[in-house]
Image (cartoon, rainbow, N blue to C red):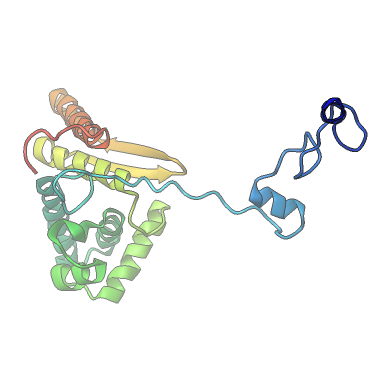
Amino acid sequence: MAARRRNRVQGTAGHPGVRRRSEGPSGLRKLPPDLEELAAGRRDSLRPRRRPRGKISDTRVAGMIAGVANHEARRVYDARLERLRTAAAQDDESALQQQLAVAVLLGLWRARSITGFDGFAQDVVGIEATRARSLAELGAAARGVTLEVLPDVAVALWMRSEAALLERSPDAAVEVRVEGDRLRLSLELPLAPSWRTAEAVAAVGRAAGGLARVLTGEPPRGGR
């Protein structure tokens, strides 16, 4: 009994009171897998950090676009479709580039249950799909953005804000950009009358507040 007690005190390898971990020397911290591969020479560079997705889990009755009431999405769709058709009728290539690029950024076709950009451009706007895609790419390049649908939260903020402006101050405009892991919201507002400018800002604030309630899971106010 006394001999077993002495052995426990002495530990292993003849070093009293010291116990070695079976997985390696004490005091060494295990590296994350990507750093371990880099240190061992199995990888030349670190994997790039994943881009934030900005997904919205909208638990309300299903809408066409996450975080956006259907009536708001349709209001934005109808206004932008009218601008596109006007630009196409006038053969205004600059306006077509701009409007088609935004249509892709917003995934605008979803507001009226259209299957994709090509169908929207060709069957609704009346522009051949390949040409429409080329024009949209030029419009995205002019904006300095990638031609792809924005993250859910950016689309929702843009469409909610634009729907509010169309109702309250149609001569104002809004744009949302994604810069790394941040959103940049830009407003173009009329200088006068001042009350209209203030009303437009308030309308965007209410739209953002509505989106905040969706993100925090609060029940919606009114129907979709």
